[in-house]
Image: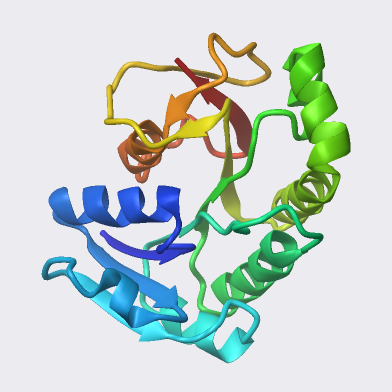
Length: 206
């Protein structure tokens, strides 16, 4: 398949690019600094640009079969990069008649809030308040998009190797507060052409 990946230089994005190429997919990544993906193999098209620039997003989505959004921020400062970037992605997908969209969100967003521990509710509500607000607005935009979307809510991202063993479901409690980014990528790529998760927001935990 031809896949556009946004947030490709972040922790989850790097895993998505790596695993997608290993599976033989063609990947297009929109990045501000191409050097961060310079060591990747054939099958990767790197486009230099910014997620806030709709024209750059549209060029990256033209001719694609699916889009994966793994946008994030590297600190806890107030930002709406996830929401603003995702709105541009949605607009570009509609213009180019691309329908399949995966978005990496977080456990604790939307109805999954009730499945957080009291400690994690404190972290998310107080220390990560702006991050949660961004995710909530992002998910709302996705659900209203009319596209064939799937929202993935990891229970807590870590940089450990892929296990291939994890639980996935709507509104399920976390087994642990950690899930490898590699397993999140595995779940998304396993469901690129499947319909089971269309129009669902699912938690992934191990």
